[in-house]
Amino acid sequence: MCYLDTNDKITCSGCEACANICPHKAICMIPDSEEFRYPKINIDLCTNCGLCRKVCPYNLSPQKCSGMNYTFGGHIKNQKVLSESTSGGAFSAIVNAWCDKNYVIFGAVSDGLNVYHDHIFDKKNLYKFRKSKYTQSNIGTSYADAKKFLQDGKKVLFSGTPCQIAGLKSFLLNCNQTNLLTIEVICEGVPTPLYLKSYNKYITTKYHSRIKSIDYRYKDFKSYFNHSIGRWDFEVMQLSLKNSRKLKTDRWFNPFWSIWISHLMSRPSCYQCPYATKERFADISLGDLWGVHLYCPELYNHNKGASLVICNSIKGKKAFLSTKDIFIGHELNYEEALKYQGPLKNHINSNPNRASFIQDLKTMPYTALCKKWSSPPTIKLLWQKYVWGNRQKILFWKLTKGFYHIQ
Image (cartoon, rainbow, N blue to C red; front, side, top):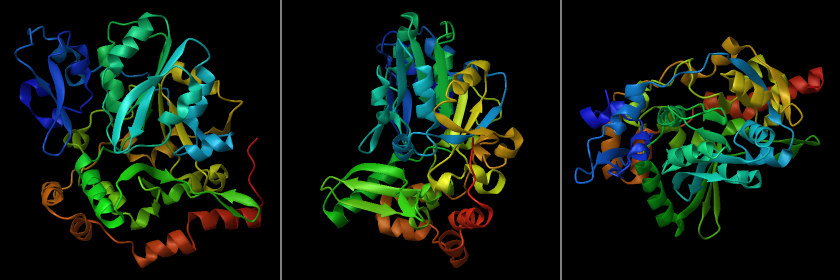
């Protein structure tokens, strides 16, 4: 059932397909008390045409891909692009290979603490879309814009979360999608914007400057033994403040990761996400190559970042294979990769303490909130990560067995 009929927040992912389809601009997205955005109908403008309900992916359930599951792991050759990417730069590689002429690219852009969808006509500006945002983007008019470009004969590459791709596919149901390529990020739920607001308030008080931007996955390349080593799997968060100060925190000391991964602050629909299954709507699914040190250590890439690429359609596979000259790696076993990708199999589990956390988030100071709800790292974890962690294991394997090399 559609949220517009039930007001049940479990049935609204905030994809904004309904707002895009309305010919009378009668639907706008309004934040609730948790600052997740939901559609609201202006009855003075509504003509009861029913398009909003027809386009809702919870009602329509657009066609899924064939389930090809061609799986690949690796990283882009360009070291600059790799350093600017969250994982292995697969998105940039696909864009550079597929977008040859008469194209437009859609993706999420971060503007301080706000994230919104936008489009570019020149892949030289692709840097705007790199890096994971960990905030649900405002779609705006992107679906309608994509449809117009397709009708004008342009090649359209559209990236987003699985629910946003489902929203796009529902919106474009009767539109020729031959020139459309869809890329989704493997998603584990979107956190409430309230957390960032609380964090920003704390940072402003402590450092006398607001947050200008957040790099959730700063790689922080270093040089060891004449080899450049990154900190990809340390998931370092770097804050850039308006006074030019920069602050860095490793994942295990960062309350954000502890609270988010405990599923205490995700959007209600994420706990019953209908898109977290093996059957996908997007042509290509992209994510981090988690488990790389266990089943494909030759792709570890000096901890600079490695991508998992799953092609769900013939179109997706063809687009990805065109990256062979700029992307390095090899094919992987789909079921093996799936072991380390929970969001590709099931939606996140609900946390029975979510309501209590949200209430504390609304009323508690940030430091008190984190002290109560985040989990500090154990001695065992610190030993594993900083003394004999994945990075050290791989270094040991390379020193004793020789450096891996991918042709």
